[in-house]
Picture 1 (tube, rainbow, N blue to C red):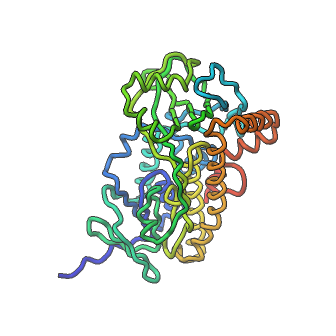
Picture 2: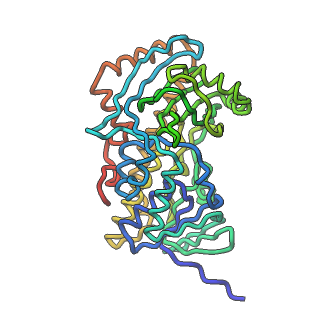
Picture 3: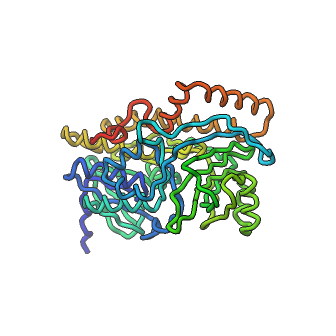
Length: 415
């Protein structure tokens, strides 16, 4: 019995989340001649049941516009027009505001939007289909071997593919990263992030809030009103893992009572609108971003604390940088999977990733406690930043993804 010849393609992307989709779309749009196949271990249609929303920074929004997805996403996107930061205890009757940010980085351009995950995924998948990118769902990569000018990819369903480059965008617990022998720096925070959507009586006016509480940050992020006009916000609520698990398991009355203690009454009555789930939090940084004919992107390369809301945006930076490196190499006739080509991507992304990982780690450790002297120091620091326009502008541009050298797509330019 003869073995079936492997399917030949240029790039295999493992993981059909936002980062994998964005990288594939960006490459295919700029170099239509490159053949791309995406494989995803999740069953077909799972993404359509994702009720969460994500903060997308201005730079990532520019990329989505360049990729031809933004017009489809826009009706679902809620601009963040203002952000306030407080530092208090849950029991404090008043939460003084130490830091405020206006939402614009340019005339008419807010520094971030809240976008339902389902709407973003749908737009990227539609664009991938337009570009002829095949997405095979419900099948995982079982293994791969590099052999000179190609990488042989084995799928769990028995199929095989021969490609020039394998991109692993399969999440923070990446199996492909382990298969490639890439080690990570990792530690758990002993915290979990509770994610849910709430409906509230009064409109949020586009304002986001981050309350630093002793157990961890509590973020209120504005969402578009529901189809029936209901005012809604997304909650990212950090608690010690045991407390988070207990809260998620409670009935609605107990959960909403605890939620109200942290949310406050400024938006009137609140109620949970949809499911709630707790996700364990930790820091994971890959020691290497690339190997021969292999590249990590998104959470497979880095998993950080959500305290600054930068996890997805860091992944979109990976997608934009990897796409630019691959496209430019192909235009020059270079081998897109060669180590010297992939090293350009790794060099571009490694420092920014480590810097963001360290920053979120320090912020979480500094603010997730109730140590009096440290509280005084950090509150003085927040107040000083609030009184220094140039420093606030710097932080806004950082949050918007517009600081420092950026790939073309994040500047709103084609590759």
